[in-house]
Image (cartoon, rainbow, N blue to C red):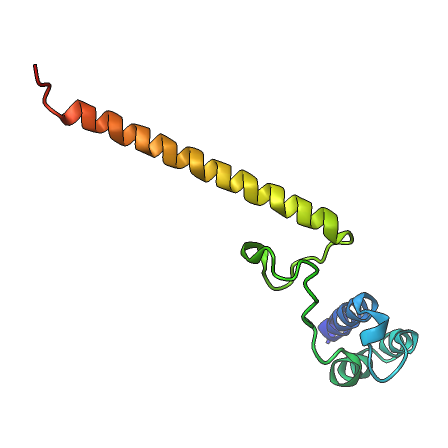
Length: 126
């Protein structure tokens, strides 16, 4: 029976964290403050009501891509949307340029290693 109290406390804390972290505009049913009071005053009923009625319908709503798909290699669900899209675009351009430079150097090194290996295996003609 003492575990029931811990269970209710855990449910209340987890639900309270979820309510607090949810954006005000996405909360359904009641104002956010009312959900907090409901969860604190009646933990189990408040938690069930929050999940059933108050929680946003779609937790991971797609956010608009400020780059418009200009960097598809960096697109992934849940990617943070930059506060300054222009700075983000410049940063991603630098990352892409650095990655391309590293790939180019890697290709050059492999080609040089292959040439060196061929020169060692070819019989010397004199």
